[in-house]
Length: 241
Length: 241
DNA sequence: TCAAGAAACAATGTATACATTTTTTGCTGC
DNA sequence: GCAGCAAAAAATGTATACATTGTTTCTTGA
Image (cartoon, rainbow over all chains, first blue to last red):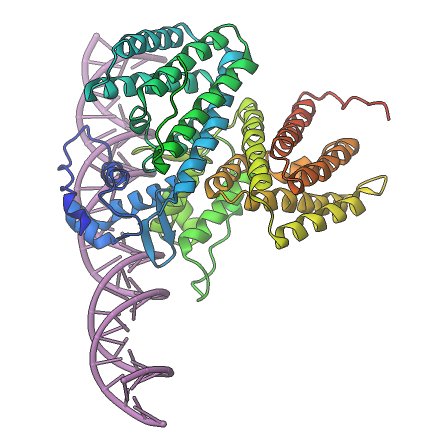
């Protein structure tokens, strides 16, 4: 039984958000980490006992996670962990490519704030520094993952479109699709994609909306390609350099 | 007070779905129709009394609608009808253009079932017939709205990508963005867009993924253009014909 | 032995009471 | 009259009891 890993929710110390939100985060983490296996049924009473809360916040959390697409719901039959086919995970990257390319276009059309420019430039410099080395250790990978996240997230913000940000988040809340995995690919691929970041930023600065869109679309699509390659077990092709 | 229009929920006659779902549909309709004004606060007790149910299904419904993006939620402060700026409604069409163009590409790449081919061809023929007249009455507009919906919905189905369908639905669940409005534009615009449908279907049949994508993107974007024109009060330009 | 049905069980759906937080009200003092 | 604070009111958050639905198990009959 997989829900043994779920420790009780903290006592209601003030300043904490509602129990419903805490429980939601806890269960979401269990699903995304794979501790709760796909297809597993989520019993309200069992969860409430494990987490030390009543069924009310548990039900609220399950409903939230279902609307995020992480759980399946059937009336009178409860919730279960959604099964994601590989094709769905790959398709999620195609969708992200469309959404993020639109975000890049919006950012180019609508301009960056000073803070956003600073954040991106910082992310680019930090990335340059991390990738200067020949080999990447676990620590560097995590660090670059953060840098990568900041770059993309800042552009989503600069797009000034809440719905777009929400949808990108939906794409990312798919098991095995988290941004952590992105950096676990080939070193050369990561460098190439960091190069993409520089180009995308240039296009946005120049208000070249078309180029920003196309570059971002290709950028995200290349992650899909790397993913497919990794899933099929084939090594990444050596390009002439 | 606007929630007078909400009649009580039907008694629990069997065969009906859960009260939570009924309440969700009821409140969603009130929000989309504009009976509940943007920014209005939704009090759980008041709603439960008006609808003749307890707070439990009301809370469930409010949470659902918030995750659909129709309501705002703040912990300990409840739910209110989300205000949509005009820019957000327009942006929703840009997002739809990206998503539906991807759906058209997927449909072209993955092929149509016999039933889907039949459904689209039926929609195209019905549309031809409706638009053959010189003027469109209210009845014809509603009929064409249905035809238009079937065309797009069938392509979403043919894309074989649940996440894509879910996201398009999110785009459509924006006030003033319902497909009903699409047909209330200029007659020539509607004809032009029906022509688009024919071309898109051709491209999908020919497995021309690139063309299907581009045509669909322009198709949805043109709705945005019509919307912007309608919002700004300018008449649609007469093109030479 | 197996299919069909009924009863027991267990799960989810709903109502309601209580707890906590937010908002309002009204008082006090300047 | 108004700023600031305290108490009261009202709203949301949570727990729990009950209702309804779904599932399992056991019995019964062929």
